Length: 170
Image (cartoon, rainbow, N blue to C red; front, side, top):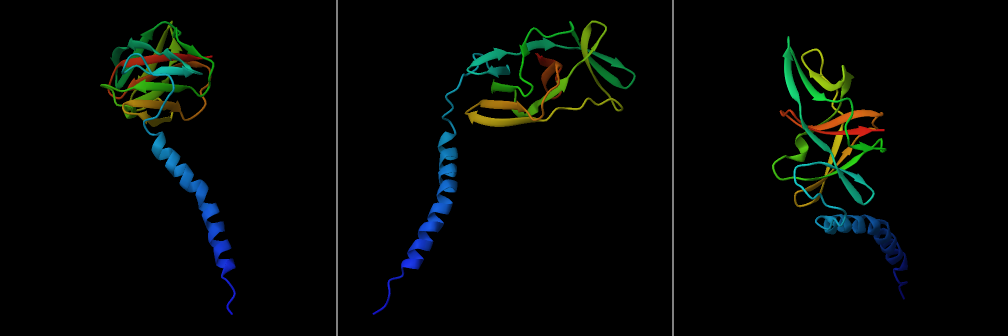
């Protein structure tokens, strides 16, 4: 009489238990696409700061563009944005219509002579702050600063544009 292959069955069950969390995570991720139930921006193409379950629109502004030698200086009036966040790692919710979320750059302004400015040039390239983009739903994205931001004035700006979406980190 042959013994039953109990060891194989136990081993098979252990393998199943080991891979079950991975399988559940993959299925959850697949079903999560399109099921975002958080706050949604009332206007497309404007990044909104996410504060718990509230959204706060960033301050849209057109920068004055000025050429000096080989540099391009973008200037905004005033030393501070009206929109502020206490979060050092802000999260934005963005409904894309005409602006692709991957085109945004996150930059810190310098404060000079009563205005905010960013200088682009061959010798003075502002360091873009890493921005992580996650798709939440069709046309809806989460933008998150990849690094903690120091207190100061910041802007999200689409590549090749002098349109800025400003905010202040306290």
